[in-house]
Image (cartoon, rainbow, N blue to C red):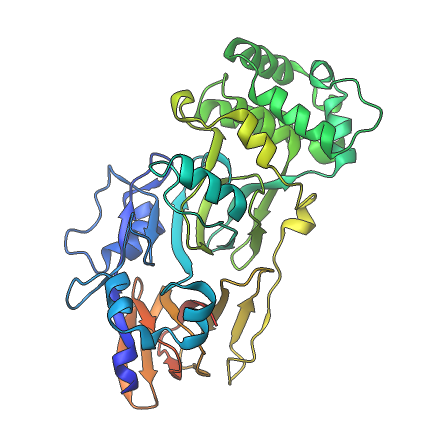
Length: 404
């Protein structure tokens, strides 16, 4: 019976200090719709997790059983193809994030490095998998993702007093950029503070027109953390600073430097929680700078390369579904926006998926006959081979990460 392949979930939430507080947090609001205690206005709600990762596992709403245990008990709902390819029930981890303060400056190690780190320190690196990810804006979304084009970085780093951090080198290339990144991350706190003060004292015309934002953004980040946080120099001077509107998306490959700054997003990644962080976090918790800079890749290398496009999905029979398709195999993400009185039919998927309502309400009709109510915060696991129909009287936004 296909209805047995669809279960409603109760998700977990995190309370990182960079999360939005109380009802201002979309992650907290969505989580609270299946949580009797509601949100507390003085508490941060940073991330709602919707997968099987053991740190914050999703559970079946009706029974409290973890989704991971359910999938092990009923492996047929995952589908043969996904089980063969990934040796796991759900090869991706979807989240909703809400934040009004910079997240740690970070990279996610690739699979080879993750395997090494997991063997060496399984307490800190709890799995051997890589963690490429995408982020779809649910509100206006500010972020740093990947490195600026080399010519832009060269122009900025030629400004005094920043030129002192550029080693003598024949060409300004990625090898030099790696060295500059390491130099900035290893600066002692007093040198960071002095450099920040010097940059803030420069007149606006000292910066190229497209980078006049640099002093203001460094000042903003220094107020969020401290003037001695190395992350502000690396993020603002070297990385792409971007603002996306709802529906816009970025793709962050493994080993790609990034730091999210403000907004609400749907994030989806390969099933991993490995991270190397060297800024916008307390110094005692930072990872080794040499390891961090050695792991760096240089993709994307410009804001347009960081963006992830969307296309109309053939899975939506009525044309109201778009698809985000990153260049890795663990997942794609469907997005359906219905106006009042509209509907969409989605073809069966040959693998598992997660359905989450981020705005509005409606119904999901399973196999043309079984109706399930949906509202903001509703999260469902949908197993392999299940056709669904989404209908809404007042309007609804639904995301559906899936694997095949």
